[in-house]
Image 1 (cartoon, rainbow, N blue to C red):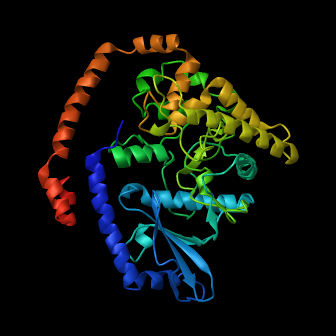
Image 2: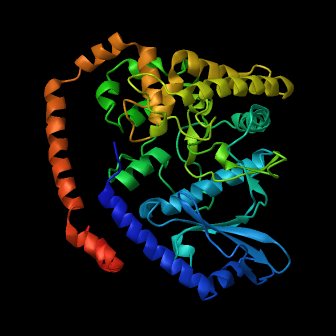
Image 3: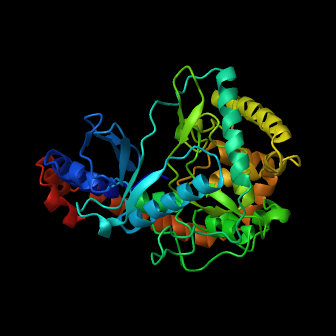
Amino acid sequence: MDIDERIELMHEVQGKLWEDRLNETQRSGRLCAWVSSFHHDRLPCWLGDNDFRYGSYNAGFKLVFGDGTAWLLRFPRVGRVHDAYADEKVAMEVAVINLIRNETTVPVPKIHAWGVAAQNSLGLGPFIIMEFIRDALLRENLNDDEIEIIYRQFANFLLQLLKLDFEQIGSLDSPTPGLRFPIRPLTWKAHDILQTGGVDIFGDRNRGFSSTTEYFQYLAEQDWEQLFWQPNSSLIPKFVHKEYDRGKFKIVCDDLGLANLIVRSRQDLTVIGVVDFEWSYIGPAQLFGSAPWWLLMDRPTNKAWDCDMGEPIRITNRYFRYLNIFKHVLGEEEDKTPGHENKELSNLIHWSEESGAMWVHMLLSTGFNDPCSFPFTKLLQHIGVDEWDRREKEVSQEEAAAFGAQKALQLEQYNCDLETEAHKALVDEGRKDDFIPML
């Protein structure tokens, strides 16, 4: 499935309007004066790099004070983060960073200040002000020896996080008393489908989950695949680790991978910072301990990984080779780390491979999945074509036909909307404020 271009057009305009306000706030000096109000000595500050840093979901700014201290100011990007969930996104990231900082030695940044949109006098939305970690982001063209250095450090971080146990699946506790958020977690998948597809798949967020099985069924029902994964099917339980179904839940960060690492330099690959913990929540242990998707700094669900006539492309061979490297260094780290002699994380990863659950995890954690995707292809191979065909035949043909007819009508209306010249003309003429109410 593709994103809804009508929604994307509206979000693009909303984002540009917000960026205009942001730039004006900076030019007027109000931005730096506002940040200085959070410094214990109220020292003046200025923009460190004379530029804003735009990521997928955040805009970041390095600010330098007169004493040489550097902070990073981050706002969720309007047009990229849904307005209704921006406050929660920031609060959950603050909660998980504070937890990791207090309970582990994982090098996460210190948070100096944060607030929801109502607490931002600049009117630019919720914010986080944190320690600025200097030096370099991890480059992509690493050789095998360098990859091993990085994997070894990441494995150590994961072993520390594995020690943190929680009683139920859901959102982390709010970092501020009196500020409450729903039980069901704000996941990357559900937010992405709402923000770029316009479909709210969250359901009743005040209802929790009693088990991994129940949570996975909830995730499966968010996709078209629910026709094959419906609750009365026996497929979901086959991919649930029985020992972890009702307990030992862990911190899960949907977007945590190698791109979150900051190293000392391009030559010294010591990790000195782990950043960007958005889309974090308490989730199943087997999701935390699954064979990693991030080994090649890319998602296997992305189109670049799609299989040709069921045959994986060359990059998939690299994935399995790097998975073996990671498992090797993880085992070595477990051997020398007190409390991990039973190799719980290695065993979970091995189980996810043998059971095929690793492919289920990748699919359930992302939206807009395609049957040609690498994880879907591997899952199909694991289940077997005959078994999959049998399950397809169990689906009501009348229901499938009705669904197809409804989608055809929706597609026709969608194409008409995209061709509406009035919408395009307003954008071309720069009349951004007039454009948004039309959608």
